[in-house]
Length: 159
Image (tube, rainbow, N blue to C red):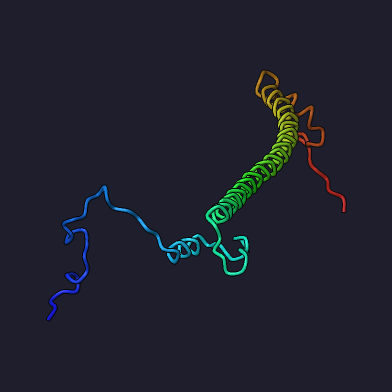
């Protein structure tokens, strides 16, 4: 009775006649086809061989090279598209920012004009206030206010 299935098959560890220099590699055609399928090559990418003949290594290598070139072109186009999108996004952002900057400059000009007008009014009122509290300011105020009634007079209201 067998104890282990590993003992039935010779391996590197059970064969004493194995030397690394004598080892040769043989890849069966089934493995080669599996590698081609793993690379996602379709039947149309490999040139159709004449009825039943296997494709040679050169045609397989050419098909793999074309597929690699196609992937590189697709990746390059994708990178180019992303870069173009970022450039367009930056340009649109700059245009919008310049419009907002111009609008703020216009608002600043309007506000500066209003501040200038109000500053002139403030200076005029400050000078008038200073004149009222200087010598003879009460007489000047009474002279400016001609609609006021003198303290010794009565106001008459007509109905």
